[in-house]
Length: 207
Image (cartoon, rainbow, N blue to C red; front, side):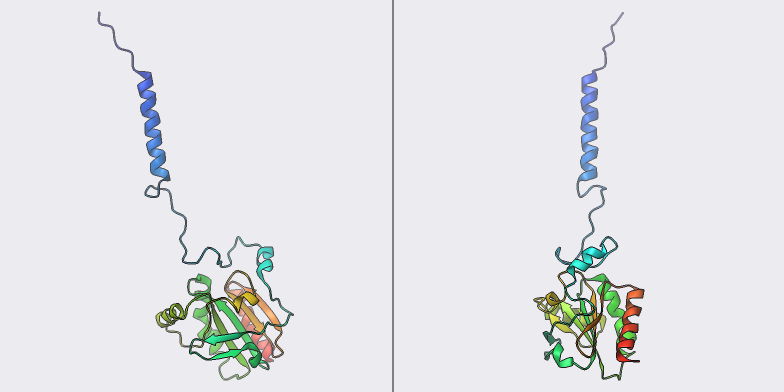
């Protein structure tokens, strides 16, 4: 009677271990099925407001708040002209900080022509002043051409203007009254925030 060979348990265990390692590598490597982290065009130090941000986080980065005097600054506009915020004293100003890579900024800007510029057209006491934060003229020019925007925009490539008002997060809006005082400061974009901006502008103008 022929004796049967016993199965080689060590070899079987080794094969199982190797198979497990291969499966684990396929899962973890970038070309496997593990989803990659979201990619953003924004530099890591620049952020937009999201649902994970607490009020304290945002408050800590807001340097100019409602009830305080708006810091003066000189800004170069896209058309090459320059002026200071102080030269606008006597007018109500909506100061908006944005960037081309910022999704909420782009969504907000898409409403500006109809809901801000056209709405207050003809009112010489109102100025909408969007300032591009941390980007070159070439970047802003390409964005304007792509979107078809023709309204005035300020340039702040070195963040010298923005850094007087905040240390992080965009979009940001500051409604400044005729005496240069901030009456409303908001961060981020949503329907409620945008409607509050419009109401505050109307109230500050006395409409």
